[in-house]
View 1 (spheres, rainbow, N blue to C red):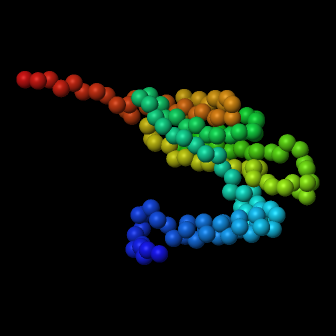
View 2: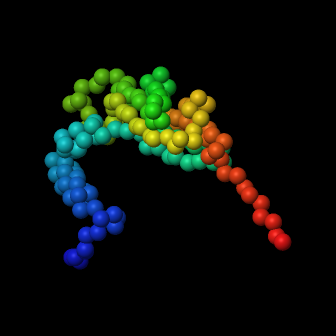
View 3: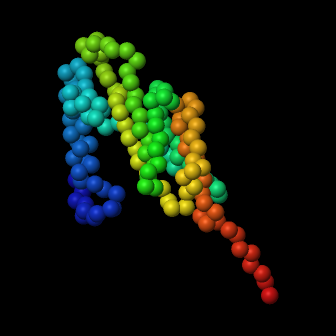
Length: 155
């Protein structure tokens, strides 16, 4: 086994390694004894938030959030003090007794994601659309934030 010098922000995280090892041991014993561990199922229920992609074009900042299986009525958006917050809840389709399940991997419950917005966003012009489980939020940039090309003259 190689000995590595620990460097902060080097990409190697000893705490993540320990958590990964713990999860592997849980998976090993869960598979051996016929199911997932209670800790694994509990952690899935606790840690739920949608994945997002954030990108920008010339005029807008765009946030796309994955919300599969969530109705648009169960999602809310709010901008307060230059912070955009996406809140929602994924509800179970129907109540089924836990002993009838062999494995539970999908996560249910409430979530909240918050993003600090740059000052150069027109908060009053923000739009949002929802299609095929993807929430797309378009945040128009203010004029001062848009890049202006400056021509160079040759003498």
